[in-house]
Length: 75
Image (tube, rainbow, N blue to C red; front, top):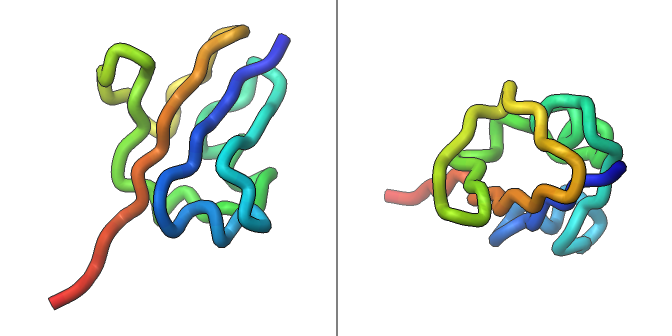
């Protein structure tokens, strides 16, 4: 049982340059990120394959892929 998180933008730098993080189904998105070395506070949005936004408390199901968008700053 596994899920895939696709890291977009600056999130890759926190996961040793990896674009994808594979994890077991069960933990929340936030827990998976923390285990991969990515701070959940850096994620602006988590999107399912149909572009439906889910919270970081969401528990992805087996075989699911989520795209994670980084918080952007500037001024």
